[in-house]
Length: 258
Image (cartoon, rainbow, N blue to C red; front, side):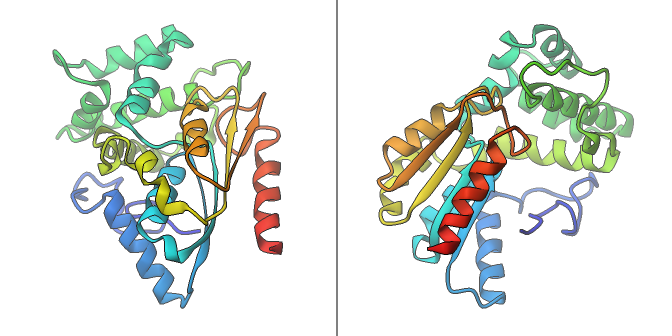
């Protein structure tokens, strides 16, 4: 496991508005992974990731198929424009009041997508505006990733979002990657599935995942020979949901034993 550019122990931190993001793209992260692999003397490896990490894992595997022995991906996304529009706009049908607050706080300009509006606010010279935008963005994130049937809380259900440094890092990087559709061509990860022929994979998705509905995982599995799709019917987004972690561990154990 490693901390990608701008996150965790990586320096400089994206929580600092002075930290530029121009050199923080999917292609830079894939190059970082290759640098790390070579530095550690690893010939090839299993790639494991979830949510955004599933997008990065797929992109890396298609760019370097000779370095990948298998993939285990959960809460699968491809970070397409349609997926970003769903998670920032379409999913409002499930949380209309929370979404209205999310939209109103962005004060979007005419024709401006919400993800672009928040990226603009997060770059505002006024630190108070930046901090409020990060808080509101993370409150919305906390809303749509919660377990089905879990009541909304006043502030954050996930304690990570209570940390202002984490909030700013998360909000800046998520909006940065989402508004650029991860610098991938439309349909690139689906079109590139032929590069994964001979590489086994397990895609694990929650049947009740409102953040990352199962459709992308189903489409990927349908076009990837040797890929297994595991749908945990009652689960939502992330390994914390019952059945998700167990399915991921079972897949990892199987490949390790192989």
